Image (cartoon, rainbow, N blue to C red; front, side):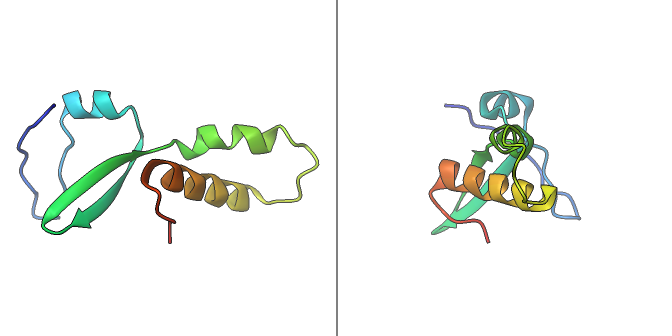
Length: 84
């Protein structure tokens, strides 16, 4: 288990400590509030998820549609929740 305290800036920002970033191996995170606890979960890289769509040259989807779909799938895969 890795635990660490960080300060929240005036803009409401925090820096995820390097040890935790290395453990997550993600470029995006999903926040969820459960009771009074904040859960931070890694989200699958949307760009990496586009690979399966890029292989199908006959697709009529726009890049934005493919990216949005990949993002939704990544969020669902990691959290079980739909991205809205």
